[in-house]
Structures are given as C-alpha cells and as structure tokens.
Image (cartoon, rainbow, N blue to C red):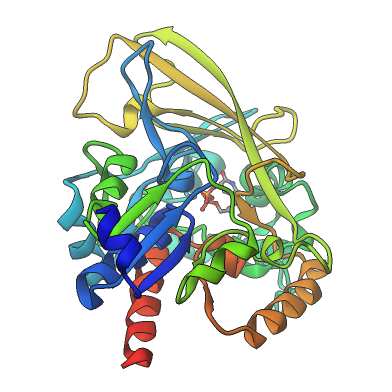
Length: 378
Ligand code: UDP
C-alpha cells in the first residue's frame, strides 16, 4: 500500500476520520481511483461517533454520547449497510422532573399524564394549540418558537432547564432550528426519531467506519494534528475540523458546547432505559445514558451509566455542538467568506460547516461533495 501511495500523483489529504472524512476517502478510492491520506488528531477513528467496548463490563460504550443512526434517505441507508449490519433500534427517551417521570418527545402519553387528562389526538391538539403564546407571531428564536407551540407549562417542565444547561445560555439566544429538532406528537408514538430507518451498528460505529476506510488506496494516520503546511504535498484537502481552527482563529472563536461525563458502574440495570433526561435546572446534569440499552441484543451482568454535563468549549476541549448564537453569525460569515476565496480545499461535516448535523446528513453531504469534486476534475 505504501508503494501505491508514495508513487501516486493523485493523492488527497483528508483531515478527520469521522463519517465525513471516511466517506469522501472511500468515494474517491472507489469511483476515481484516487488515494488519500486520512489524518486525525485523536488516537482513534470515528470522531465523536467512536464506540469502544468497556473493559470492566463488556458494554459497548458510545464514548461521545448517544448515537442512533436514523434516516429517511434510501441512498444513505443502503450506503451504511454496505459496511456494517445495522440492528433496528427505536430510541425511547424519558424525562425526570419534580412531578415524576414522563415520556419524551412530548407525545399524547406525556400530555395526558402531565395535565391529568384522557385526551384523544384531536382533543390534545386543540388543547395544546390553546396553550401556545398567541402574542408570538413570527418566532425569531428558540424560546419564542417553543412558547408559541407548547405554552409556558410544558416549556418550563421539559425544555427551558435542559436547554439552558445544555447550551449555557438563555434559550432566547438560540436559533429556532434547534427547537425544531424536537417534535411534539399527538399520538402515542414515543419514538424519539420518526425516521423511516433507525438502528445501531451491531459492532459499533468505530467498526463501521473502519470498514469504510478499509481500502488499499486509503491510508490512515492517527494522533496527527493538521497543520496548514501539510496540504502542500496533496492535490486537494478535504477538511472536517473546526472552521475557525483552519484560519487559526484569526477573527475569534466560534462558540461550541462540549460535554463531559461522570461514570456510574453497577450491577444489573441502572435506569431501565438508554436515556433519561433531567429537564429542570435543579439537577446539574442534562441526562444519563446507559449504553447497554443501545444494544438490547447483548447481555451483560454489569452496567455503565454516563452522567452527562455540558460546558463551554475551551482550547483543548472537543467541540460538540455549534451554538450558532446571534453573536456567532457575523464571525461565521467572515470565515465562510474567507473559505469561499480559497481553492484546493473543501470544508465539510459538522465542525467545518458549523452546523448541527446528524450522521446521516454528514454522509449524504460527503457523498455529494466527493461526487461534485470528482466531476469537476473531469
Ligand atoms: N431538548 C430539551 N429537552 C430535552 C431534550 C432536548 O429542551 O429533554 C432541546 C435542547 O435544547 C436540545 C434540542 O432540544 O439541544 C435538541 O435535542 P436533541 O435530543 O436532538 O439533542 P442531541 O441528541 O443532538 O443532543
């Protein structure tokens, strides 16, 4: 393999061995015979999707938080299943609040339990419409959107505290799009994602991405930080790291939240579900994920709970969630304008495009970008 790589004139550099980078590398190898060097600063592939078997318990851990693969995109679904077996899995999330335990996303069961009613779907819809804040005509932020749609009581119980803890700011500083990720259901479907396809790779995400990268034209180097001088030896760079880092933070830092965990190990079953959210402010953590429930086809005597906390991303922290505050907008635009001036580099993925993307979107966009780039060279 080294011989092919060193003699090849057609070699690209791919920064980041998560889904975006791996998918581009594979596409170029298979469809254009182009070799790539994929570098990643971490000691493992798969970026924030990385999964690892826990030595003490045998549980497959989602090392950077829960990842459920869900999509409506047939192309993406067929693509991922070339590289791994995906076991059907429906994510069901509960919320602990002072008054008890409820089902999320807010659905007919949550509504009936919360308001002590026996609504049918039409009655619930009419009731919730009545709760919405009529003074908000065109919601311009997360909070206005939430209040317009569900009113203050549901907002206070399930949304405000969680959002403030997760994002470290007032929800009115966040964009409407972040709230739009959370559906409200007027039936008893308590599946967190309603995508047609939903599942979890039987052997974890890292094995899946290892299979995508397993091609003779792809070389992977871990523990390798990107430096701009590295691009010089390559035809093109596909960059999936943070956008502001590419420019040396010259205009300032885009804001991201990062998350960290405290581990609880116990016998048996800790909480009876994969994810319990703590949606009020009196509890400091946002959620506890118990990863053995992400793999119900496995059986383990012991269990691991990961208590998740959120904080601002500082130098050295792994960025997770692009905040996209109003104050980030100007900075983002200036970096995007600078990026638009460059040739020889493509920016893709959650960090490099500074968007709150899911795995299936990252794959779809990486396939398109690789296809576009190959077509443009012909
Ligand atoms: N959210 C909330 N209460 C919850 C769960 C989510 O208010 O119990 C809000 C929160 O602002 C979050 C957004 O909905 O950022 C999207 O939630 P999602 O579960 O999609 O976040 P992820 O799984 O990506 O962390």
